[in-house]
Image (cartoon, rainbow, N blue to C red; front, side, top):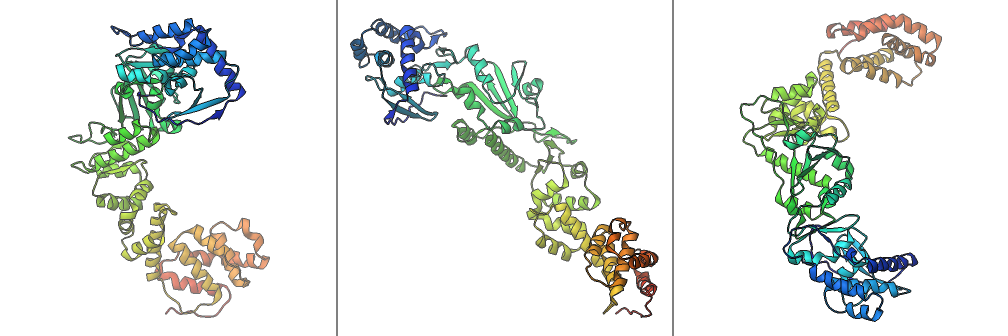
Length: 530
């Protein structure tokens, strides 16, 4: 419960099910035989027990448990807990409990039977004394008044007085109830991705992790972002949900350890300490407005802002800091030659510290493409016109940046090759087709050229013979031979030599090789460049 806050109470009549009716009467009989179930066990060192007077009154009520009229009187006067006790054990004399009220709290709704003039929280708690969460409603008012600490286990409540030190039974249950797989070592409960020694020294791991120190219990609980994300819970709330105290959170110190490992050789480290948790963020988390996963995510966003405001620009990736060394950072990304120049241009253009969660060129490009994508394309291609055109044409959310850079390089190569290759006004169909495929092959690659061959749907035998010859050159003919007639395949085999020479021709030889191919088809026509 965390603290003994006052709950807004709304009630409404609800018909009691037969099962719940029997359960309430059964529990009332148990309370009649054992009044101590209604009060916390004292394990503190208080000079005077705050529940001493209450305990005496409950004993008086228990002594009159066989008298329904006296129970009715006790439920209307005296100590509030004793009133709730009297009203509750009075249910043992009832054959029916036809209607229930409902207490609505931040932890959910709890049904209870209205009896006497006891406060509704105490009645609800008393009638659910066997529930570790709801039974705390009995003592919330006293906890606030006397500044007590009460812990509720599966078996009972324990009052430690003014000391927050929890009973061992409670600690065991609270940690066992966490929805995270934890190991134990050196008074540290940790997930599989952490070590007790590392958590103790607050060392950074590959993943940011939440570190909760339970001060009075002298225990630390630590779990990384990956485990907390799969957990989808609220670890601090789970630890304190069965604690009644003025402020149960005072006994816990919460940190997120996220300082990256050192992968550079800096003369002075600018991030020796893991940035602390923002007060406003902690407030939202402590109130239950956000869970573990969102808490870690928002904290890491705050950390990024801290890094951005450092006096020097750093390069950080996958929780490793490469310091100010851009060359070391780029090498760690393992880019291709084309990507390396683009990366350098992008990284130099970024004014603040660079932080990426995955060490790949694509991740860097994706993170900064919107503001620096044009610079990346220009650095890779050296052609401003192509860089601008490709940047506008391709959506980085649909195409990987590395593929966009590759396309830009194809276009520049195509542009440069076309600049030196001869141009023609009109060509015979057979060499028009060969010219088209040759230019695709020279500016892109073999795969694109084969794809273009497959797109031909015409019936010109000479063109199809050249097409088959091209497939032979690329060693792609075997699986496609069935698409061609014997005449076309025989002719294709004959034309394979001139086709290969055309595909591999230097710019100054290109026209002669194209003419030679046309002649090899049996044509006497002479082609002339523009």
